[in-house]
Length: 314
Image (tube, rainbow, N blue to C red; front, top):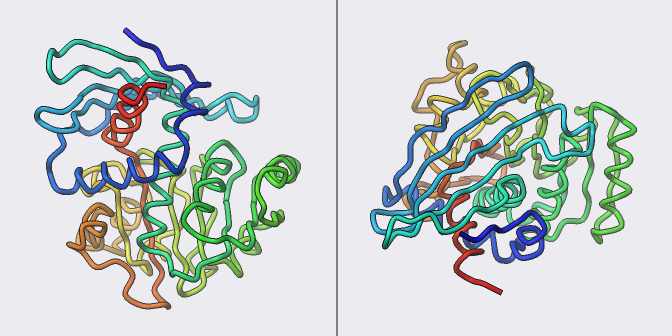
């Protein structure tokens, strides 16, 4: 059995490679060709979780599972919050053939999926990006968004101002885009076109009243029912898209809270992003519309990315 470690994933799974892979995987997922179950999440203690995500890319395609720990406290120590393994099985023999570093796969493919959704839903002239959060997903989203829009500015907010400044300084050496730090979320989003929420916040950090018409948002930080990053008003005001309808109906925290409060019903989900990519569902309809992509992530994204690394050997 082959093992692909974090360094190899980081080196080989570029955004130029991963974005098309994820775009295809999301389209295939929404067409019903793939097979997967809802993720199982075991709470270990406050801020510490273990998850299992099984699935198959198709009836006669590669299959496998992701075993993942999520420890939110790791970010402050400079350690990946998401760690684990993606295990791949050969579709011809059923034999396990490869394990891949799941933390790095998750970091890159999540941002790639956000880039795919942003490309499909954001205004074509969107140039200004806000990152709410300054951890690993902020880093990967900053990189990925620059692949689908010609960014002219990035503003970052974090609950720790010192960490936000350190993040901006590190990324400024890598990206040819001016990065600034906002002291408040309201200031960060006041003049931007694209917002990515990338925190582990248990309660909303972003209010609908602060978001300009025409903005596109990627809600990424909350990956299970419970913690929310945006308020009910923002969910209700938006044209709301998801990566998986079944997943969000069961585990999409912002959607579920707004629904429980009576702001929306199940029909508020316009469609899956894969349906937009396949031209089955209309995406953005006007320059003034607020669009939201709720990202939970699904195993097909992991399997497709991992299989590409395994099958396309150096």
